[in-house]
Image (cartoon, rainbow, N blue to C red):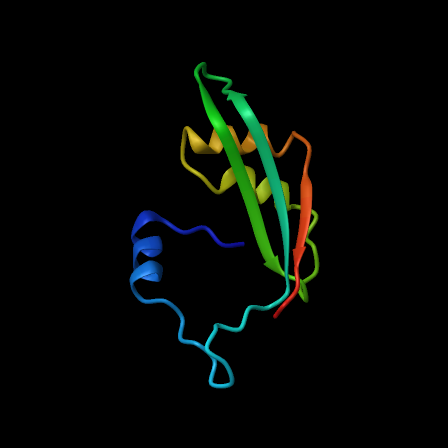
Length: 100
């Protein structure tokens, strides 16, 4: 699982991965993604979030862990932790991205 904070995202943006020697693009491994989306998510404490989206990305060659949803639900501070707990109860979209 990848969970990046604001500073980590800024560092990744400012210092992108180097392109591979054989091409002018970065090699991307095959990935499996789980996506949860809610146009409006009502939070248990009151209030809500518009366009709530949660994505879990892992390399395709790693086995799927049964506790992924539990990990995601506990990976965030509030109010995002409550949102993640509600999101993993919703419909899951599965996506696969092959390396290119």
